[in-house]
Amino acid sequence: MCGIIAAASNRNVGELLVEGLHKMEYRGYDSAGLALHQENNITHLKALGKVSLLEEKLKSENPSSTLGIAHTRWATHGEPSEKNAHPHKSNERIYIVHNGIIENYASIKQILIEKGYTFQSETDTEVLVQLIGYFFNQGKLNFEQSVRAALQRVEGAYGIVVLNKKEPDVMIAARKGSPLVLGIKDKEFFVGSDISPIINHTQQIIYLEDNQMAIIEGDDYKITSIDEDVSLPKKVEKIDF
Ligand code: GLU
Image (cartoon, rainbow, N blue to C red; front, top):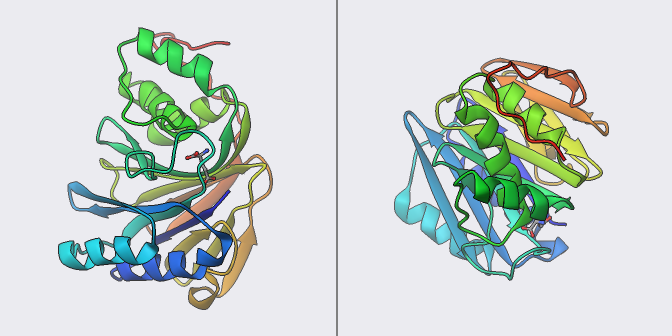
């Protein structure tokens, strides 16, 4: 399991995220990546190997963004490669970073393939984000409900942070088995897989408990349970295992 850092701020966060990844380099990793929200776009960069390679890509693109997620990967499913590096995405719309292992990924992947979904990577993580996308794409569940509906159907361990291209001021974090920390300072929010990448930026630290989800939206945040009921509307096609 490797490192996550995410930030929702009122300043440009790209460099801050890469700096956070550098602070987690001691953990060991094989690749790194980030997704930065911009008005109607997401800048999505990945690099196999050192964080400094990702940093070079960031410098040459120089995107301006106040909301982003970043990750260093320690491969569990799929070889170390650029295509397997995080963030993973669904439909160019929902982006995820994930620490941990989705144990029932193979059966979910099979069902999604039968429904016409295609996969770009060999990771268990992409299956989770495509499952979130599957619920969201049906248009009956909002972003938060779609994340929850997907998490209620996966087994394994995860610390995740998710972005949605259509919701430029929303970031959703959740954990089960893998650690995740929320940092707050005034109207800035940070998420880390430990405190090392975020401690310098925060006044208040909240250690998310197992099965908790944090929804950060604009200046505000709430913490809820992953297990909260999501009654799927009749028109949402269910995936059951
Ligand atoms: N299981 C995921 C993968 O292989 C996450 C690995 C990690 O925790 O870095 O991509």
